[in-house]
Amino acid sequence: MGATYNSQERSPAPRFLPGTRREVLEKIDDWVKAGAAGRRVLWLRGPAGAGKSAIAQTVAETCAGRNQLAASFFFARTAAHRNEAQYLFPTIAVQIALSAPEKRQTLDEILSSNPYIAERDLGSVDLLASLLQDSSTPPRASSPSFVVIDGLDECQRNDNQCWILEQISRMVHTHRLPLRFLIVSRPESHLAEAFEELDLARITKVESLYGDYRDSSDVAMHLHSEFSRICGAKKHSAVMQFVPRPWPSDYIIERLVTKSGGYFIYASTVIKFIDEEYVSPVARLD
Image (tube, rainbow, N blue to C red; front, side, top):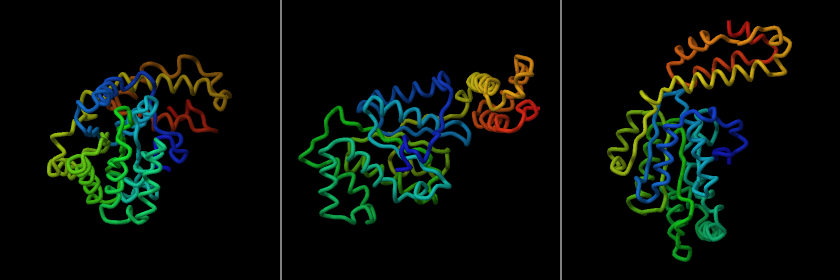
């Protein structure tokens, strides 16, 4: 349960300031809305600190609100079970089953007749295939079909990451399951090779968070908002009530934006350092 977009284990989930990241979110949303007419997989790739998980979180929340989200799984390198490949597809199967009473019944029947199906090699994919291809419950056009897999590169071992892509290829090409996948990761070379070798490239749309998506104006907006919050925070009132406004100056924020290189991780790390309780934000900024 800790791997889902709305789990307590991931609280607070990564997010960014409303109004930022508009371009990449609009492109992903266009792909989601294209449905069956669009490509079956979208690979969002970018370096550490580019805000990939925040984007995946926003997309998952948006699609869940529109009843388009079938399942989500957020890998985490340092979290037990959330960094292992074996839990991915059973978790997806359970979320899909819980989306409709008839699918819940189908999953119960599958596990009653074969309780070890998810423990077998390739069994978890067979479980999904049985769940979605059950003849007594034909898929409705409005059924949720969108799956978010965030942090694929944080799954243990490169071969496990490639195995996951192999299973997604089986779902699409062999089982023809009515699912579409947003896969979010760093642009690791072994993943790029796997997309090519598994015949996923021709059905995959790629969005990169390099270049144009390094938006300094978004970082500036984030910093202005966060510094304003710090100025008004009760925990800093003893210090901040004597600090002349505006604080910090536009010059300081411009320097921070320049140092960020357009990546949010720099800005968010700066803010966490400055906003620590029982210390002076002014001294920390200096």
